[in-house]
Image (cartoon, rainbow, N blue to C red; front, side, top):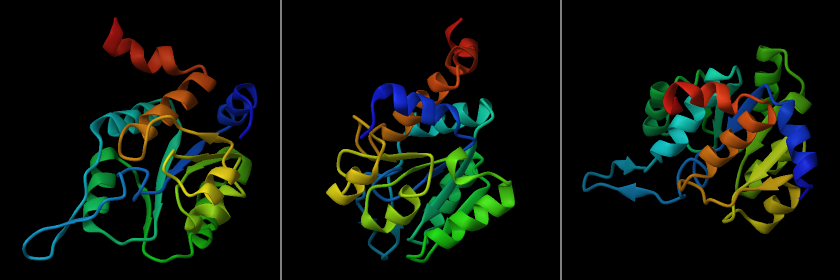
Length: 177
């Protein structure tokens, strides 16, 4: 992990923050209903963090190996337009995002928790993991959140980005004045 000053400098350059889902936007648990339907639990604090980040001008995206209509619905609710689901190759959709947005790897942040996230974490300018992330993944991260996946980690990193880019006070002002 890098120093706080190094991480703030990295976060200040982020124009696109990419989120893994299972273990990051959720706690990694999968719940199945009586008819076999899969259910996931998302954190409302994380959701507002994403909305505030978007308000500041940072684009958001999801790259998830698991295909889930629940994830698609959550992304729609949050206004996340760049969503890729399905497939263990996360590097290809990452490269597609770069081509689509015209951004560089250094201008991207990514938060992941498992080895499937490693190829992207090695490339982005701001690599983040969660406390429950695999040790190999935490070793690639510039920053590890204090809050766990599905328990406020995303909100924490969104606020970190907002502060690094001097946008925290502006996006919070409508709520705190």
